[in-house]
Amino acid sequence: MPGTQRQYSNPSIVLLGHITSVALQRSFADAVEADLLPQLGLRHIYIRIPQRAMVDYAWGYDAKNRPVRVSPGVFDAEAYGVKSTAADVIRFVQIQLDPSGLEDPMRRAVAGTHQGHFEVRGMVQGLGWEQYP
Image (cartoon, rainbow, N blue to C red; front, top):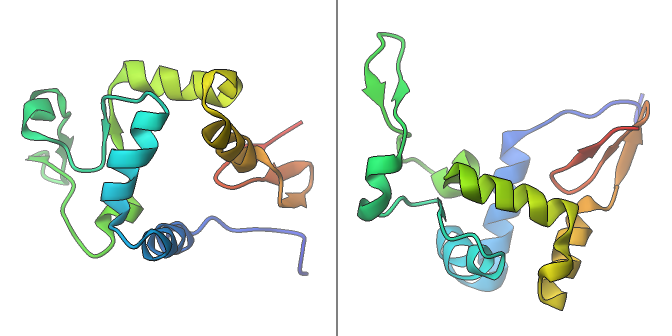
C-alpha cells in the first residue's frame, strides 16, 4: 500500500549526485571537494584520495582475503561516498548536531537535510537522514 513503506536505493543517491553536478555544470567530485567540504571545515575528507593521503587510506579485502581498493566505475564518485579521517567524521557529526558556527547558506543547507519528507511507523525520512522517536 503506498505510503506505508520505503526502500533504500543506491541509484536514487547516484541520481541526486548526478542531477546536482548537471545543475552546477561541473563534476560531482569537484563540487564536493572544492566547494562543499571546505565550507564545512572538513579538510581530510575525499572522494578522490590525493597521493599525500594514501598512506592513511585503509585497505579493504576481497573474498580471497587479498587487499583491494574501491574500483572506479560509472558514477563511482556519486555512489561510493567519501573517505575520511576519524577527526573529520567527528567534526561532521558535530556540524549535524549544531551547525550554528557555519555561514548562513551552509547552515540552512545542513538544516534542510534534517527536514522530514516521509513518515512510516514513527520513522521520518529526511534528505539522507532517518529520524526515530
